[in-house]
Length: 308
Image 1 (cartoon, rainbow, N blue to C red):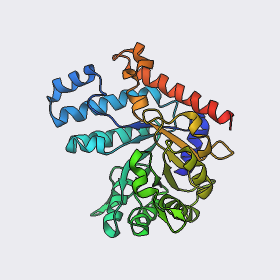
Image 2 (cartoon, rainbow, N blue to C red):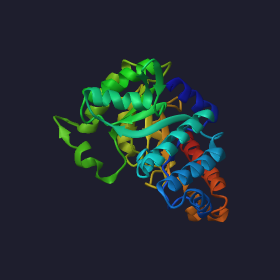
Image 3 (tube, rainbow, N blue to C red):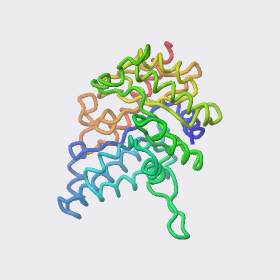
Image 4 (cartoon, one colour):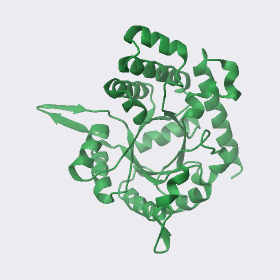
């Protein structure tokens, strides 16, 4: 799967992943009105609105990008109907040729971790039938419990030729409360990065590993350091746009080949029509605003990489 992700990035010339993280406030009134008229102001109505919103965004941008990243919590808040919308979104994106990164941030041990891995990336045996659960291509994994929590994911990924992105240095302001703590002579995030590099060496694709890392765009100097620590890992970079990251902050996340990183933008793209820069599109043309936001982001990153 890492090989296909890299191929998609080369094809689109856009190291961009669109975060499909919808909230009711983002969804235009015309979509909510139609969904609620059919299902009422219920969890089912919310799930339908989310699905229709996602579908419209994907239809507008799928030819420009290599991947999407739905954040499962945004769907779980609507219960089972929300998870149905999550699964419909995954399946539709894969039909469009997009790689799907399930932003699930799971982290546990033993059989529990294996069950998470099987449910999201693997196959489960039911009698004489083999079934897939959510069937994302990649998943985000929390390494706080150590190798006991990560190895079950790697095992399933090896069976399915899928991948993971391990949280190393997250983009949120308080991440340093734990991740920046010094242990010996190194920070916790450096130690995690070194462990990711070990896992990566053991599970390689053609040029990059199936084991990637998450390092926030809001910490560009850390990105520069971690790029050297994890040379074979693709870095998923959150924090672009709404959290303040810009193209110029991203250059050190990439290798000299222009690859090695994929940058996420969620609100900045899917809710672009609510921003002043794209207000002229209006609520009715929200998907067109998202397409323009992708084009602008692609140009911003490309221009920054030219100066590297």
